[in-house]
Amino acid sequence: MLKYMKMKKPVDLSKFTPLDRKTLYAKIVFWVFLIILSLEIIILSTIYYLFYNETTTALWEQAAVLVAIGCIISTVVTIAIIAVLHWYILLHIDSNHYRSEETHQVLLDLFRAMENDEMEMYYQPQIDLKTMEIIGMEALVRWIHPTRGIILPADFIPLAEQSGLIITLGQWTLEEACKQNKYWIDHGIDLKLAVNLSPLQFKSDIVHTVRDVLDQTQLPPDRLELEITETAFIHNIDDAIEVMHQLQQMGICVSMDDFGTGYSSLANLDRFPIQKLKIDKAFVHKISPYDEEPNLADSIIKMGHSLKLKILAEGVETEYQKNYFQALGCDEAQGYFFGEPMPANKFYKFIKKNTKQATKTK
Ligand SMILES: [Ca+2]
Image (cartoon, rainbow, N blue to C red):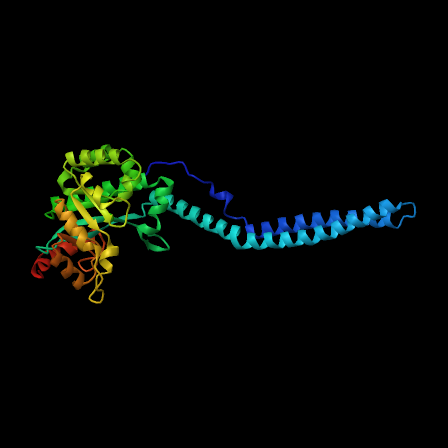
């Protein structure tokens, strides 16, 4: 079951939902325009009265004409400004408002989803490219929305990160996946489990959290791999390295996720106490028989091997890509060519069915 820690809701959605902002802005513009126009009519009427009053002097008459001209010009300018403002409000402010309203609605849905146990762990197989055996899996969270169906992490994880909800979600993910892997190990399926850590989790007390989860689930530490992205290093590289050392001392493998698209330079890589590089799928997808441009994946594999790191290619979808990485000496691969992310029961059947078949295809 999902362990949901109550968190302070960042926004009061009742302030946003029912109001039709488009109508409100249109009304404000209309009333401002009406007030300005009324004031100018009063001024013009006063001038008209003074102008035709025989007691007025020539000086007063000249002043009245100037004020009248000023009023007419200012009326024209006011109409122009209000027209431009109205156009701007309708085009920009309103659409931003609706975007923000939608974001807050998704955030509220996300809180409800966690309370209602709508999150589910999926598992994607990882293959040893030399033996073609399934050697591990990556745990990937899915939101099973009651009306919208399966929602992928890319559509809600960024929001969970912005709101801080990722700490709770990440902890649940880790617990659930470790519990599941321990169950499988006890039932004869001995695979390594890779779990994603968000940069925010990495900055929290992740060593303590991981130790607690391993204690609770009794999963052997060497059966757990934690995937971090290069963004975890942006703010304080020394602290991040220290945390990684502590995780490794516990016997956990640390891998660099989505490598090649982030911030760290290749020159810095030898400072990071990691054991595996996961080549970002952006490089892998470009590999096809029709693309003759040199691919950075080749350099990453050579450089990674020179640092004694294991290399995994993410997002392998075709036989050509699988052969390509085998030929380059890449160690492991993951992607739809081998198996899609699937719920625990389906993954269990997949492993039972494919362990021998996978070996035969090498
Ligand atoms: Ca990952």
